[in-house]
Image (spheres, rainbow, N blue to C red):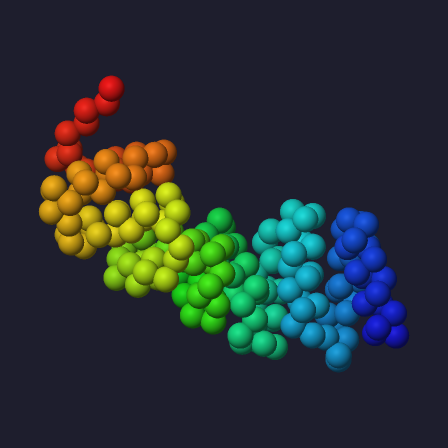
Length: 184
C-alpha cells in the first residue's frame, strides 16, 4: 500500500498536480512508515500551493526523523528568512552549512543571514571556503570593513579591482561617507 501511494504521489508531483500530491503526502505522513523525505516533500508541495504557514511544521518533522537532513535544514532556514526570524534562520542555516559547506546555495544564504545578524567572524570563515565570484567578493569586502580589517587604501584597491553591481551595493552599506566617489 505504502509503495503504491508513494508512486502515485511522485507521479502527481511530476505532473505538477499539487492538490493530489498534497492529499497523497498527507496520507503518507500519517502512516507508521512515514519517512523524513515524505515530510520534506509535503512542505515543498505546500509551498507550491501557497500554504506557507504550514511549511515549517512539516520541515521540523522531517528534521526530527533525520537531524542531518540538509535540504530540510536549508528550507527551514529559507522559510525563516522570508516569514520568520533571522536569528532562527541563522541557527538552521548554520547547521546546514556545517553539514554541507560545499553547497553554494546554503553558504550564500548563510553568509547573507550572518551579515544581517552581525555574525561577522562566522561570515568571514564561511567566505574563506567559497568560490570567488562577484557576490562573494563583495560580501568578503563588507565583512572585512565591518571587522575593521582593511585600511582606506586597501578598501579603495579592493573596490577598484572588483567594481560591479554587487560591489556598488556593498560600498554604500560600509562607506559611511568616507570613501570618495569618482564616477566617470
